[in-house]
Length: 190
Image 1 (tube, rainbow, N blue to C red):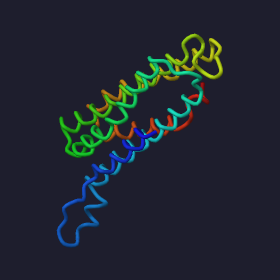
Image 2: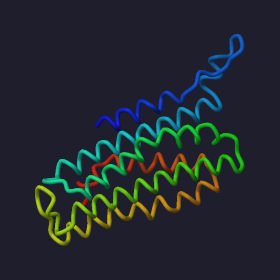
Image 3: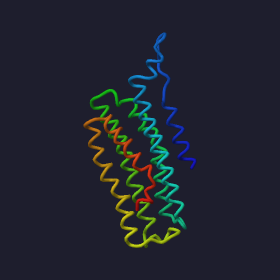
């Protein structure tokens, strides 16, 4: 829980007070670059929050943890704790257009794709031997459906790497759509 809370808190530290002349602070706070910084912050905060909720959802079902599960979880937490950095890079460059905007969106999407791989690996490990590590073992069909669901996220995140080179703002918008989708408990869908 601490890693999630600290990562979410670190996001806000990247928001900078705009330099402003006399009487134009309100304009700087609610237009242009400030809005995209707020958007990047909000999407990343929601990603961390939804990941935290889903993390609890999975680990509520775990009966025992082995070394591999601990390592996969540690790697997932590594990515979560790293998220403020690509968020800051994206917020800084998304409005610049051109190669830097695309590179920042690609970097951000790459981090999301890595997180997706780690989620899938964690779930695949949890469901080995028909979910023997879980509080309630699963049928072959439940294991298959859950694995497809967790692994199919790669079919979404990998194309976003290409979207980053088409439109950085569109890439961020699609990340927001995805976090809204994952806000629904993934285990209730499997």
